[in-house]
Image (tube, rainbow, N blue to C red; front, side):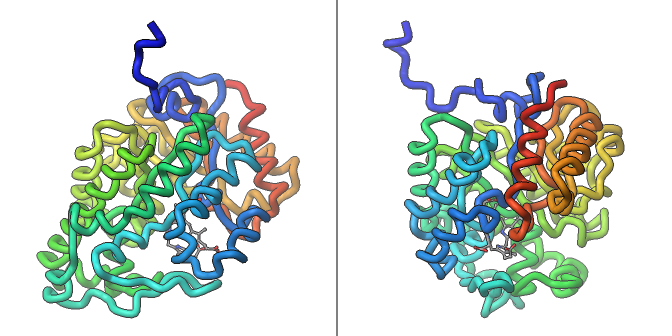
Length: 350
Ligand code: CP3
């Protein structure tokens, strides 16, 4: 009897989750990486109230408002909690600054064994991220099961890269050098990041995340052998530790590692726009759902071109697919371009 059942908070009946679990769907679900952001006038208005990015992220009601904006405005099939991958290094004791129009910067970076030893990790570090869990709870309540809620974290290699470089980089030579000069130290740091990420993602699921995405934004900087040695084993640990929800691994630029990613216990593999869908299908086979991968720059084109490019991409994947861009939407993308993309997916039928 329905009345005797405990309420089902995460019914897998929603398009996005059904597709992520490998079900055949009538059309692919669609969302955009970085959909909660400057493309939306409502987000820009909210930012005026929170000029300090970190204060914004740490205010759960505001973060939840940003999480829901793209669902309300664009009709996307999933929400992603508004936060940043850099909250994890901060929780471990490495403070970051977000510099307007430039990006993140760590005043202090990781240089020595002493620095690594001084970092908090695991549940102790993840405890300080209560504001993210609260943003998830508030978002989940406000969504009222309209669409599923995605939780996320940076992949360990990408987080190490920020902690060692102190910012984005043209070459990532400090982070890459560490893998040759101090491999043991690199592994110690990667393990600490992994332990923290597992504790963090576990709490995200408790707080209401329906699916977890790992962002390995700097995967493409590594040689294949290093990706296999320093990235894949930690992705595996994280995926194995989170059996209760589907997981997406988005390793940007890692066309060379697709076969390694196939072996991970995740359901979805995110693809950047450099990868031809036919190539990905051939390397990955039928056991995974693929997510992506329109060039974000396509959304600067006229509506007809966007529709044509989107439909061509959907046909190339041909099923077992979640429509997205090949990386985050650029903040100055015209909203009409984003709408044309979402509309083209929603009008599509297999
Ligand atoms: O909509 C969403 O995707 C959810 C929110 C989200 C943000 N950052 C908010 C944000 C997510 C999933 C991220 C992940 C993130 N953050 C990544 C991985 C994805 C990727 O792009 O490869 C990385 C590398 C970061 C680090 C980061 N945060 C950078 C480099 C920057 C500055 C430059 C930029 O891309 O805007 C940020 C700031 C940031 N994080 C903004 C947002 C909306 C911009 C702040 C603003 O303009 O208001």
